[in-house]
Amino acid sequence: MLRLDPLVYDALARWAGDELRSANAQIEFLLRRALREAGRLPGGAKPIPRRGRPPGGDD
Image (cartoon, rainbow, N blue to C red; front, top):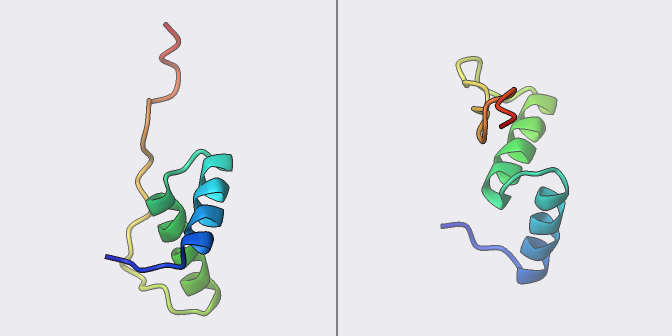
């Protein structure tokens, strides 16, 4: 469980929605970016999996 100030969470959730991500995916995206910029992202860390519909399925 992650405890956040409700106003911080609301801002994060809005940002995530703007980028078509869940709040959880946005947190992971931001943490990975911060770790990479600090030179602390482990070399074995797998990329964030792409979720949602696969491209090209226009029915």
